[in-house]
Image 1 (cartoon, helix red, strand yellow):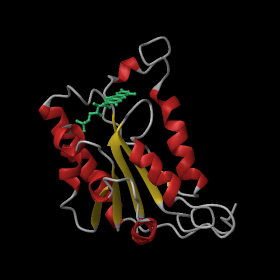
Image 2: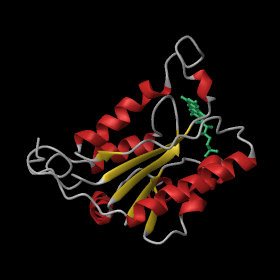
Image 3: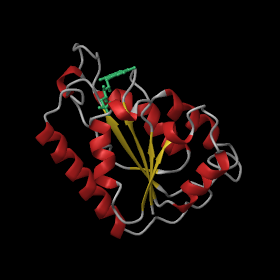
Length: 186
Ligand SMILES: Cc1cc2nc3c(=O)[nH]c(=O)nc-3n(C[C@H](O)[C@H](O)[C@H](O)COP(=O)(O)O)c2cc1C
């Protein structure tokens, strides 16, 4: 089971993210949870989110990259859903061994993410907080799927990315879920 946590505050204005979501939504065993549709008032149903994650072998975080980070509701989702004793800490092994795939659409071109360029540092620098969030919960961090130039990307390039993401999820579908790690409680 693949659970896609999709966070876009204005889905009707989304082009890049929407193309990705629509490419993967029809796949078997994929559940897309669009947080801004589910929780417009930010009142997250923690139990429902944890139940969804418990069903997943692969968890996808898909969103536009906002201010070098995640949109507000996804940050709030991290704060509420990744509870101590459930996702980390004593007995917090619910996510251990599950795979995590980060899929940000990024407005800047890849070359703007470099030392001395507009965005100052390589994109890898901005991956760290999200990666460590997953790793702290003992998830298996997968190579992120990043779409740069997302505001102006040509339709054919966007379609190619969408197809690649679809292939990537299809490939996960056949792979066994890793067992929960021994002694994963922090
Ligand atoms: C509030 C806001 C903050 C943004 N911050 C960044 C940023 O830090 N770096 C960047 O490269 N693009 C940034 N962008 C551009 C978005 O990443 C880009 O518009 C989005 O990924 C396009 O995907 P969409 O068509 O699904 O909305 C920002 C856009 C908005 C509206």
